[in-house]
Length: 317
Length: 301
Image (cartoon, rainbow over all chains, first blue to last red; front, side):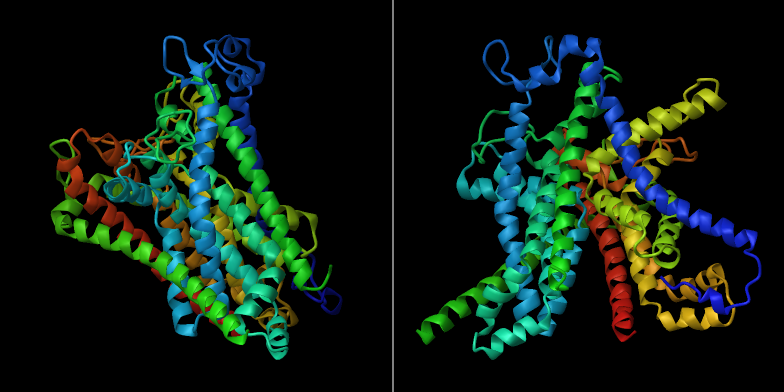
């Protein structure tokens, strides 16, 4: 950004050290891109035999994973005499918990974002914002622990669930991981709306909530939408909370009060015991590659909406 | 009509306040519950002792040691790389260059990759590719680095925390007033001299914030280290780069889910959770303080 006004200076020849250091910092920046590519390549490399290896195909192919088994059922049972790899129970489990987490997390986070950016007096804002930053700093293993040890007991006592660990328990835990990211992105978007928008609305006689609801929120909409997309990405990738509080039973049930098993938890629970290079090993990397691609696309979409918001508020569109 | 509008407005405002309150309350409940059940067991013996009687007695010193060693190694890798990348983005590159756009896009996406995918990446890249490669080249195929160990776990975490460091450093660089650089250039300083003597000393606090946030994040992540080096119980501390290690978060996970006697391990478990929370919170708290002072400076500039 701050280039020296080189025409005005009587500069010596570029020194070797100077060039070397510039190359070094440029290489570091390049490494950031390289790492993302390496993740894709090396997770993909271990997943690829799912498509190419005939040894793996004797046990499982991407095609058989999506179809029902011979007896018509959908079962995930990779460690068995005859391993069964149906993705359907995992898809249902992942979507079930993600939905619960988003239904709880997104309204709370967006309302809180509106509160801090539009209504809260300075002192309250100074409490809410750092508190949510602290919430973002709580390790997910601690949230998982809390959901399993405390929330599960409370909910079972209150509602008499048959399954102690279920999608509601895990979803509440997961919403705690989703809230900070949705809040932060939404709050940024709302705060980016120029003060003139608010002043204009208030001057026309609208009160503060009308201004917030009908002027500021619509203006910030792409950013708020980005917040939801990024929250969704966070929810389907989160591992420890779901691993600890889901019960890990791969069941074909949409009932949120029953146990389930998600994609991420499946990888975490099974990779430790798997034989290196076996079909099961490649299946787990295949699921991982799938998770990577899905979250990657969600992140791209979220990022795109944020930049659209910026362009809109700067009047470029 | 007017009263109706006022009523709805009040309801809406209250609702947003209630949502904020609920979030803060959930945080408070977690902290309160963990502190309440955990603090009784927290003692010097607990922090400095070895686990005894199948994790139901004694302390968790090896897990603390493992966590600190892991995070230190991670910091050594991620801070120089992250700071250098941020310096490139803010001090060297033209803001419209293709590379800058790509790096920023990569940072955004890297920050959103699920932690478990980093675990797979660590296993596939560091252990099975780099580690096995080192073994073949230097150890005649004997198993030395081609297995889960603290070095690979730390490097996996370094990749995971890279966006945190870059973003925080860039924010600090942005807070250094433009005029400082212009004065230095006018006095004949080269690009690197400006970075080294003007920009970096001014942004130490911001780099520190990024480092602290990365450490706090790294100390709490479990999914990436499960397959890259963490062990539930080891009778020795990690001494070499290719030793396995015990870690607080992983310890909590295994104690919570695989304990044969939940009631007997509960006091120790709660104390361990409290310790991890205190550690990450203390770090976060410092980072938030430092950052808000930087932001004030940024607004003043």
